[in-house]
Length: 265
Ligand SMILES: C[S@@+](CC[C@H](N)C(=O)[O-])C[C@H]1O[C@@H](n2cnc3c(N)ncnc32)[C@H](O)[C@@H]1O
Figure 1: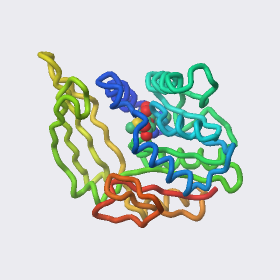
Figure 2 (figure 1 turned 90 degrees about the horizontal axis):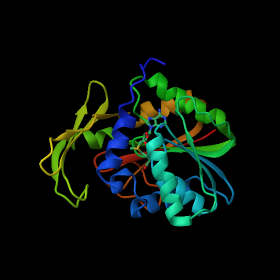
Figure 3 (figure 1 turned 135 degrees about the horizontal axis):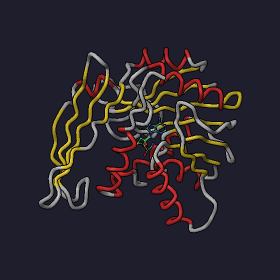
């Protein structure tokens, strides 16, 4: 691996969770809609085995488990996995839930086989080198049963190139008790989005979170990467602005904030 162990993403994920639990991946309407569409597009069958790479606080893993699938949530951060365990426990007490595994999606310590491998919301795309993203996809292909399906959510670069902005979120909008200033910048040379976030709370010093940067491939590049990992029938579906459409729809370059890449092993 060419990245020398940067762990900004785990630091950032934990810092965001500490700012406000809602920031850490609350199970909300968006997550429900995403899981509705994923069930349809992945043609999930009762009892299917799903692996969620970079599962965070488990919003998709928990919803899928509740709908009768056997889910493994893998994340590098022990802190966010604790949030996932707690979220399941709040909803189901001691009932057995998803399997939570701390690990690196570049070399997942789970073997499968799975019927579905998915990665949602800024989990895929954090590495500096596309060889590392390819390694994630190859690892996913190796862990899928024959005919197993892949779903990866990534930002749409055509949208983000036009949506560079700085925005102030007063208390109650992102964090309950803090002002947050968030700046998105699109780096066209590197093909990535930078997300800068500063927290202002009480009289305390402003807290600058590690900058999140996320690779933003154009669909042709991403399809080539997924094909190179050994997948077939690769297709791209676009979100409806920030919302999840009820049915698969083509990417709208100017208006889909995110796109889903679907493929078959
Ligand atoms: C923005 S969060 C998204 C979480 C979740 N998929 C969701 O939609 O709520 C990205 C997650 O990816 C995890 N992550 C980053 N790099 C990872 C890696 N190499 N292996 C596994 N997880 C990783 C982070 O710890 C974080 O929880």
